[in-house]
Every structure is written in C-alpha cells, then in structure tokens.
Length: 340
Image (cartoon, rainbow, N blue to C red):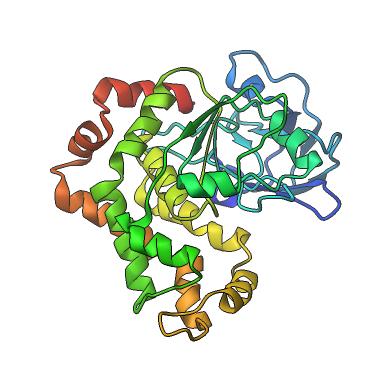
C-alpha cells in the first residue's frame, strides 16, 4: 500500500508538477498516469498508457496546459494504486482554495478528488483564475458569509458559470455586537484564543441548520461542491470538518486538514494590515498578540467543536440524525457518492 501521508503533488514556481510518494516496497517500479478528468481514474475502464514508469520516489512532470487542473494515478508493479492531485489550487485571487480529496475513511475508501472544495471569498479572482475555476465544473457553491459580507464582496465565477449559488449565513458567536464592532473597526476581545474556541462551540450550538442544509444540497445530486466564507478558515473550516467526519475520516486527519489554512493564508501580512486598521474598545491600536489567535487556526479550535458534539449528543449517529438530518441511509448515500 502507498503511504497516503507521504504522497503529494506540489506546483513548482514555473507551474510544473513535483510528485512525491512512498511506495509499497522500496525500489519497486511505479507507473504514473495523468488526466485532466479525475473520473477517468474512478471509472471501471483501464487508465490508458502511463506517461512514465520509474523506481524513484520523486518525479518532475511538465505541465502540458497551465489552464487545466491535472490528476495523477500511481500504480505499482504489484497493482497497488493511489490517485493524487494538488491539495491547494494555484489561484492568484484566493490563496486558501483547496480540494478535500484523497483522505482515507475508516472503511478503507478514499475521498474522490475534484468533487469537494473549500475556499475563502471569490470576489478577487483574476481572469486566469476564472477560467481555471470554470473548468473545475462546479455545480454548487455554498456561501457561509453574512449577507453584508456577500454584498460587499460578491461571489463571482464568471459570466458563463452554471453553478447553483446558495447563501447559508453563519453568524460567528451568534453575536451581532461582535459583528457591529468589526464594521466599526473595533476588536473588543480580552482572551482571543478562548474567544475563538467559544465561536467554534457556538457553531455546534446555534449554527447547525445552515450546515444541515448544506448536506441536503449534497444529497440532491451528483455535485461538484465548493463551500466558502471570507478567509476559508472558521465557518468553512467547520463545514469541511463536518463533511470529512460524516464521510468517515478520523479526527486526527480532520485536524490536519483544518491546520493547512496556516500554510496558505498570509497571517503575518494580515496581522500587520489589521493592526493599523482596528482599535480596541479604548481606541488603542490592537496588538499582534491579540490578532494572531483570530487570524490563524489552532488544533484546540476545531477540537472544541468535537468536544461540544460529544457533550451534547449520545453518539455521532445521534448527532448526524438530530443536528444534520442524516439517517444511516443518507450517510451511506453520501459515502457512495464521494468515496471510492
């Protein structure tokens, strides 16, 4: 078996692909297949001819078309295989656009690539970005931002985009006063890290109808889905964690995916920018140590969600049924649709 944690695809500065893997056996030959359609590898048909065969664990592949996303199927001489793609999509206008594919569920199946995406706001995509995203074939976009955020930075995926857009506003901390203060340029928080944990607990307590609606939309058809908020960090992070959890991914892998936001968001740059834009309730500039916990993600934030679920529900199944309106049949439906 391939070690999934050691298999990944990265984009080089000149837009080519660097692929690394840890195979079933050292020195074993691995055939590499390439396609711009992930379904090509999930169908019963043979994948065609490999683009190369190697005993190395690292290869550099020339990108034949920088306007398309590519997927790779690695097959060892023993017949073991793994499908790979870039976790982060290379976009100029939104840095935290990611694919949830490739994670392994507890039943041994893996999430399909090219089906479930998460990101920050989509109002600043370049023309090149728009063409790239259009070719992903998105059919459903769920926006967790407040209505005022949506109006200030409208989601735009191009004139010819055929996706269904659904507004599912999530209010952080269920606190209108916090939102009002933000719009006034005020951050009035004494314990920022504790505040972020409270926001995540509140997701479980007061925000579940929006996430339940998200799952009903996932069940409505064979979707290519994008969920997003402003930074793709908190509201989207919780939504992505729920999707991975329902599909059977273990908690440690969910936390690892959640923490990837720290790799993709320019936290230091945002701290510098916001420290000049916001004040505290006394009118003083907000120090970096207050802003940092609010601009990055930490394991305890998403674990606070899981702890709240365990406290309020008898079991995961009870949570799925009561909070998300997902009975066993619907959960299996989702798994059959998004796992392979």
